[in-house]
Image (cartoon, rainbow, N blue to C red):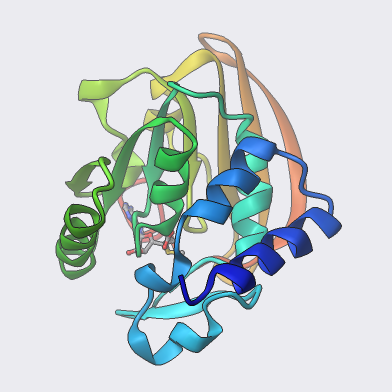
Length: 211
Ligand code: SAM
């Protein structure tokens, strides 16, 4: 309750920066970012900045989350795969938007923490600890895929596991800066790709990511 006004102001700020997806903006009004971050950084919960969540990882900047989620063009009841569960905030937003969410985190400590958090907050996301560059074959195909760490390329498994007419958002580049690639799958082996420049994510580490 304490942060309701700040949350409202952050959403207005995102609107002013050009975000228009009402399903997303509404979810942002309902998901409490302060519950996904360590107590030490909680006073900054509603600044439009990335924040540390421990283990050298971050919760992404709200504007970046907004750009990525808007690019997904998510609809209620769609099946979404997220790579990089981290704090769980992005997954909670997708869940609040009415998606069926599957999320993979490679770091066991982060994974154990987020499982407890989801349990406590009643967020029903299917979670797995493992290398997200391999995707999650058992539940493929996915209508949408969102990768929340920077990758040297688009992993083949993720391309394969995306449904035809599906969309994937993934930061691709070197370790210090990336372009956000938005892939639309037009046939089983064809994609249209749009690019949004200048992002900086922590690295995606795995077989088809950074070693
Ligand atoms: N979506 C997160 C959130 O809302 O807090 C942001 C996560 S952070 C920017 C990126 C996460 O990706 C880190 O937790 C990191 O451990 C994880 N990661 C890196 N490589 C991965 C991989 N191959 N598979 C799954 N998770 C990975």
